[in-house]
Image (tube, rainbow, N blue to C red; front, top):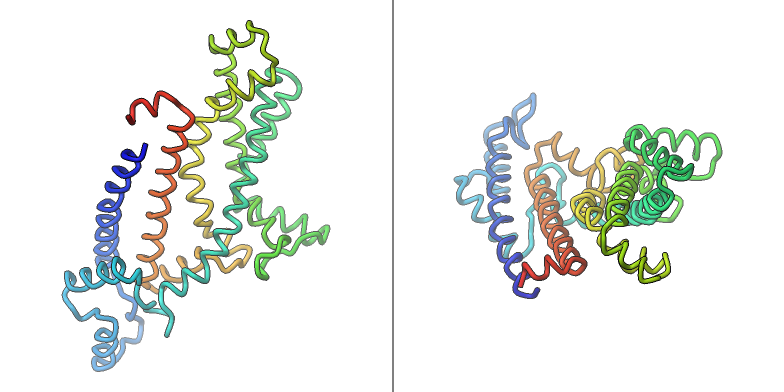
Length: 310
């Protein structure tokens, strides 16, 4: 397992470097620039600005400097659009917000989705199965840009139970609606995956053998059926969890949370290369790390995967 983990980590590093280089050149090839506008700056002013940010250097020099600062100092450089602020400052300000409501959104998805799927599978083709399946489908047809305004209409404007936006230091009333709006459609997918996988597992020969030995039904379910049945859920939650903890642009804008989604949109409008690159690298690193964790959890659950690794 340790060798496998180290091999994966060694593969991740060059992949991230290639990704940084690709993003760097793609951003430079995009039309326009961070200092272009309808009223061009005087040539002398433009020259000073380009010198200040190192944009007057050849591209390979800019790339080398950028990579060196990231690797040696974990420095993503200054923001081109926000004066006297660095990309690290913007990430440090917005990422904890996004991480907080994304984390609770993932907890909401697993805490509601898995029990719904288990109940639907255990009461297969019964009233409760239809209710749970209907609830999952009903939740899935509401993407967050539809659900969020409905929640604000009900919980803020009609009933006055929750604030309609803002963050206020991450107090509970401000976290609930962003987390639920972000996770509801994923919760429905987890419920459907759990139901289908558990139904298939419960019909396996080793489950029939366990029942024939007289084991209690809850022991069969928890010890023998639930763990393998959750493998598809774990595979699904890997990339979804990355999306959740890196937040949603719509959620950040609609609820005015101050997360990094708003920074990304602002950077795209102003062609702030440094911020876009910094956020792209952050997304990439989190994706690789969490996918590695998913693989390790997979190996912990499934002995066949552990055998293949060894």
